[in-house]
Image (tube, rainbow, N blue to C red):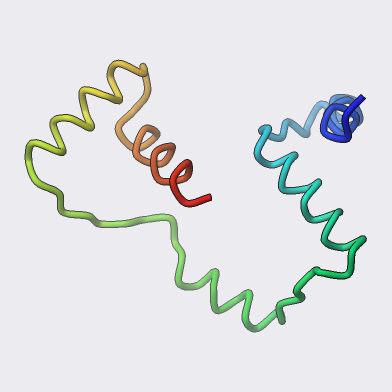
Length: 94
């Protein structure tokens, strides 16, 4: 059984915890970095500074045709435009 599957099984025992697959991978990556000593620690002040800059909102101007194309792609996927753009951005930044 893979470590990801083991972790998913453990987390299923806690009904309030429902992590996504990428969150499980992030946890496993964190554990591997911690075990290898490659974990970079960031000060609390630096973390607060990063969080204060990211409120989860981005105002973005795009060409009209791109906007139309994004709306159509989101509709095909059955999700909101916001969800679709979030998915596209996340999948291209890793």
